[in-house]
Amino acid sequence: MPEGHTLHRLARLHTERYGGHKVAVSSPQGRFAASAALLDGTVLTHADAHGKHLFHHHGEHGVVHVHLGLYGAFTEQPTPPAAPVGQVRLRIIGPTHATDLRGPTRCELLTEAEVEAITARLGPDPLRADADPDQAWRRITASKTSIAALLMDQTVLAGVGNVYRAEVLFRHGIPPMTPGKSLTEAQWHAIWHDLVTLMHEGVRTGSIDTVRPEHLPEVTGRAPREDRHGGEVYVYRRAGHPCHVCGTEIASADLVSRNLYWCPNCQA
Image (tube, rainbow, N blue to C red):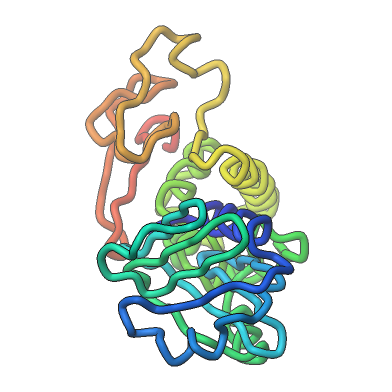
């Protein structure tokens, strides 16, 4: 599932390409046809994101809410676009580009009040200027749940997924099964500020890179990572491989139906 930096990157791209312009909106697949008809020819004022939720704002005409889930994806092409291929839920055509959306978990037309109800349920997003890290800290310090699970709980912290969760805990040497209430406030603020830095870099580059300069392949002489997710990481999807720092075999386990990765030595 795409993590928060991907949605913020899309919001920035869609605002640049469509913001302030009248757009043609359609649903070649048909499942969004009624709402698309209401939006066709309206101005897409801007797009923004909160956690893993993307919002296209069309002024008084409403807001398109998209959650990509596990299988959703946007594809972009210059105008004039080719004929739709596959199950295109939503097509947007602007002055210079067209965007197709396939396979999302949610694609719906909402009012601003309904959008506010969604965002009110979410925790602070490290990529938003209005985020309050203390809101998340209050939830964490009162919980016996593991910090690894809490970081993935979108009502506690919005936008963090499996990769950022595993990597930030490694970078700060925190055992993933540490109860939230056992975390120190200093540790939490270190995690938060690191997520802000790492995720903003993810927006800039479009990939997740978490390895510090001294541990990069060109410095240590190790082979670069080969993985469809891309980016240099410490522990994510590296179970059974040696830790880049201490050489210990990276461990993995199932936690809340997601794979958890950590170094048993660096995160002892």
